[in-house]
Amino acid sequence: MTRAPKLIASAFLVLTLATACGGDDGRPSVDDLSKAFQDGDNVIGTGLDEKQADCVAEAFHDSDLSDEALRALAENDTDYQGDDDDADALKSVSSESIAECMGADLPDMDDLATPSS
Picture 1 (cartoon, helix red, strand yellow):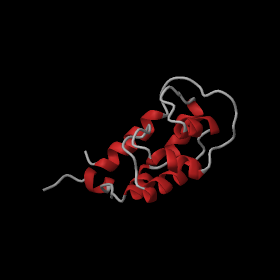
Picture 2 (tube, one colour; picture 1 turned 45 degrees about the vertical axis):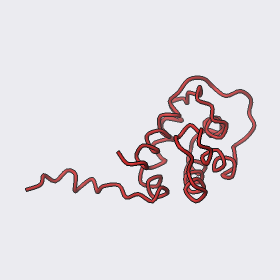
Picture 3 (spheres, one colour; picture 1 turned 135 degrees about the horizontal axis):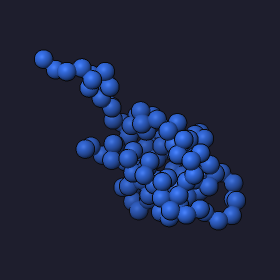
């Protein structure tokens, strides 16, 4: 598995973890998310470079993820567990857009479904 799919899988996994974040501090900024994603200890895996982190942060920020879920990402809260709405919203952050941020091309699903001769 290459680095981009591992990062994507990690990002999706983090939003299915344990407890809710306290307090309502509003939606974290793209900047806050980007800084968190550049940290080598963040919940989505190894630190991203600035350009990748900005791109991924924008994708998550512009999604329908709750403010609480985004705060958990920004605060590296590995105990956070999103609700069903967050799980549904996470699906809106497409693998393709995240892979594009990583500079990786995902295989064409039609090519995968076509048996080779």
